[in-house]
Image 1 (tube, helix red, strand yellow):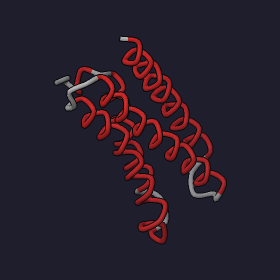
Image 2 (cartoon, helix red, strand yellow):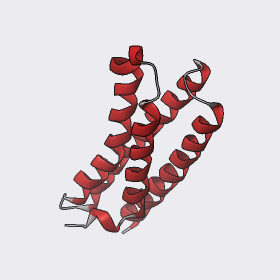
Image 3 (cartoon, helix red, strand yellow):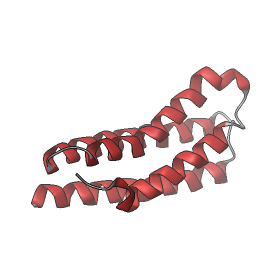
Length: 118
């Protein structure tokens, strides 16, 4: 079993989740059950899947959960674009968060490749 807290991608994705919660608290209350809920779920799904994958027995299973994290990261990236396009979020904030997601995505892909090559 792996210690998820030792993975930089978990640390980064957890920090991103906290930022997403902070930013979504600023969205209109009419989006509470729409974008806010979807964005928060996508955000916490990234580190949660890393944690779950760390608890699995094989590299193959861990890699499968990393792929789910990657899917959630892609989903969250889209929601940030949508918020910006709808005028619900400042463009700079959206772009900054998207940049953080891109770093996380690259690290997930890199770790997945290493697991497949071992």
